[in-house]
Image (tube, rainbow, N blue to C red; front, side, top):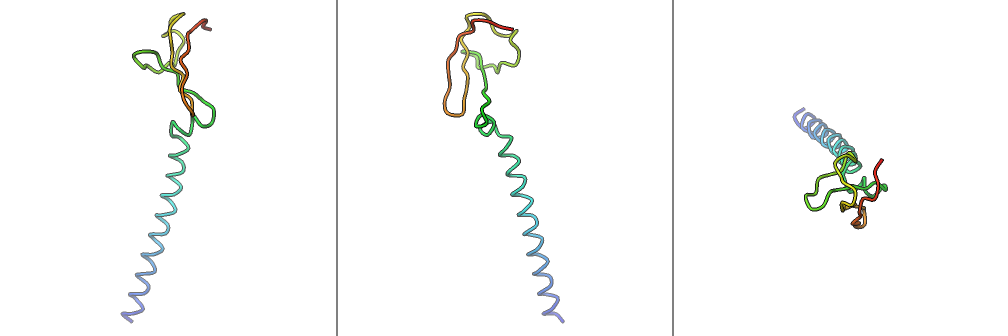
Amino acid sequence: MLKRLNDKLLSSIDTYIQNRRSITIVFASRLNDLSPVAILDRGYSITRTIPDAVVVRDPKIVNLGQNLEVMLSKGSLICRVEGKS
């Protein structure tokens, strides 16, 4: 009887570990999808002011003629603001 209980306990532990491993893989995938690198890979960019590196969320914070850094998945661009809307 002790052998049977031991086997059942080991089987339950194995099942629990496999379930937790599956959940971890799902959460890791979700986190990866939301990472800044994955977002850049989908074609989005992050624009920052130069030299203080403030992320541009509103065109009101930049001035005409100001240089900006546009971060892409495979590099970055330095751009000058020529107009705003």
